[in-house]
Image (tube, rainbow, N blue to C red):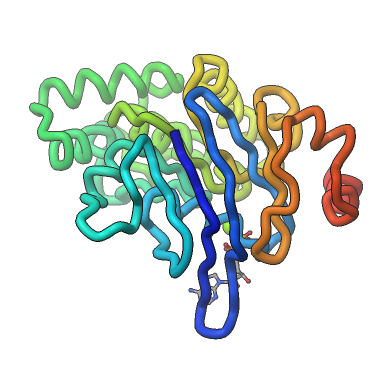
Amino acid sequence: MIEITNISKWYGQFQVLKDCSTRVEKGDVMVICGPSGSGKSTLIKTVNGLEPFQQGHITVDGTAVGAKGTDLPALRARIGMVFQNFELFPHLSVRDNLTLGQIKVLGRSDEEATARGLQYLDRVGLLAQQDKFPSQLSGGQQQRVAIARALAMDPIAMLFDEPTSALDPEMINEVLDVMVGLAQEGMTMMVVTHEMGFARKVANRVVFMDQGSILEDSSKDEFFHAPQTERARDFLARII
Ligand code: ADP
Ligand code: MG
């Protein structure tokens, strides 16, 4: 469903992505890990066109990202993205956060958007919070709203960039539980995270990046039991 082929990207002289290739099949849960600054965020953002790149190509469900003529807003509408810092609209209620994209981008009626939004809000356990503003919610609750908002757009895949790393420890699991549920239902997911418990539970693939390169791209069992590179072994030894 997502095919990343020989992607390279530079910021001036600095090469942030070095000939990265990988693919995500429908229903895959890919965990991307690696040291800070290794290019994980940059790579995941290339998939929905948030980061341009100079070499290589990416297709998502047959659509070439970054090609001339690609309708990026339409592509982005089909891929859900959840960031470290929630990125809810602060001036809108939870309910309006859930409906805005559906109405503006997908052209749904107010009624339909509200019904779908509240269905997903219920799913993440926050139906009672629909009239609140983001600032009135905990970080874990805000992140669950962000996930519900993405799901209400009926995405074909979900991208997560360190969705729990800005959360207090006691809120991490409430967000991971939602993500585990999605994975178990067969959602196609690319997840940048250091939560190796999540990786062990639901990932079927693990990509390890260091200094802009993909050093490991393996099954979960291979990655945890027989990493191919010294750098991945060091990383695992430090993180687990
Ligand atoms: P990660 O998510 O793995 O921590 P990033 O993809 O955020 O890594 O960043 C990879 C590298 O690219 C880092 O060294 C970072 O400093 C650099 N970088 C990110 N954005 C920019 C930018 N706009 N200009 C220059 N360098 C950048
Ligand atoms: Mg990052």
